[in-house]
Image 1 (cartoon, one colour):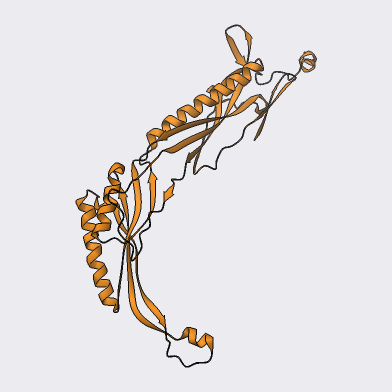
Image 2: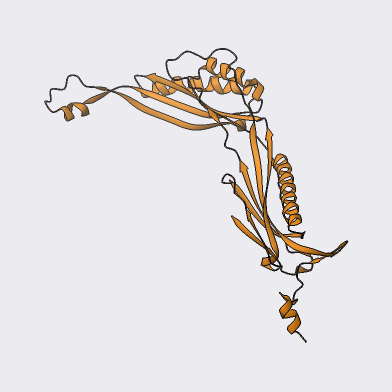
Length: 285
């Protein structure tokens, strides 16, 4: 993004680089006191960045039960029993009902090639398969709000019958207060840059006339803890490292420029109707 600032014969070229693509974006337009629209040539555009880091306080994970039997009803019945036990353990460990959600239920046949096929055509032999049983998969998404105890929770659900665990996702819940602090830092950073640039040009920063905000929540890192059908349970007290998450806000601010013609007096750089150059001023009666 390029912004050009002009004052008399002075031209200042400013370059601002936009950071990562924002997930949430809002725009706010602010007019200076009196409602007078400023001259676009008498403005200064800067960007400010505010960052806040914090430890995640919520963790999400997918927990599933996979069962197999020769008959679909048998596989489903066994799966239902284990899933009921798993959900009881989750609730006994303090996980609220609202934080347990079924996300996938599958009943699928398991096939085996029919070795008795007499066809000479290989493609036909590939199609000659018979059902030897059924797999039933039931997966729930679990939200844990005590990150420090989540390793114990993983051990408990594995002991209760969970044999498919994957996709740990750490995040910050209710981050509005943290984002507000990042916004304050971003605005302070923008004002600091504007004052510095305007001061070097011998001019004064006026009021903000346009504010554009970009909010970026760094995607949570997902860690795979995969236990599938037939594997052993994880070790007791699974070590969990939550790390830190970063929230950032970028603001793009357009300021009106003013000139200080007398000590302590700040006036607009060019009042409406004032001539743009001395020749124009002299030609007036």
